[in-house]
Picture 1 (cartoon, rainbow, N blue to C red):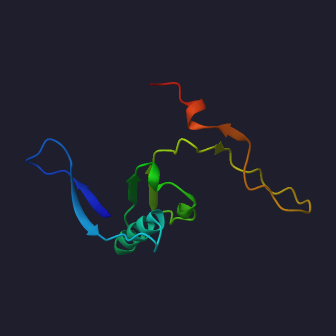
Picture 2: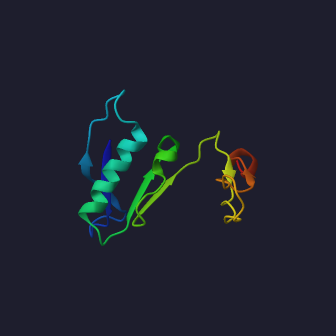
Picture 3: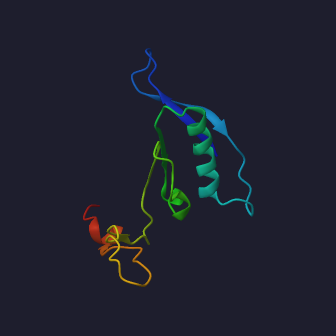
Length: 115
């Protein structure tokens, strides 16, 4: 896995991504998403005053990304099997387990009309 920083050089007409961190992922140890999160958190810890934007494909979306530091944003495509939900309603004060999901909004296939 490689992490890079996007820079605009004066002699180029388009931005360029320079690699700044690389690690070897081995199957059977840490999952790819958790491994990528560790890399991004290491970059964010090194630059605490900056916002870090991570971009990945659909393989880098999942529950391991919950609770990221507010200075980190993560953008990825949704998996075809994803189901979108609204935010849960606030606690009602009644006994029992509170809801963890809001109303079902749909799937990427049902909400996207293009192709």
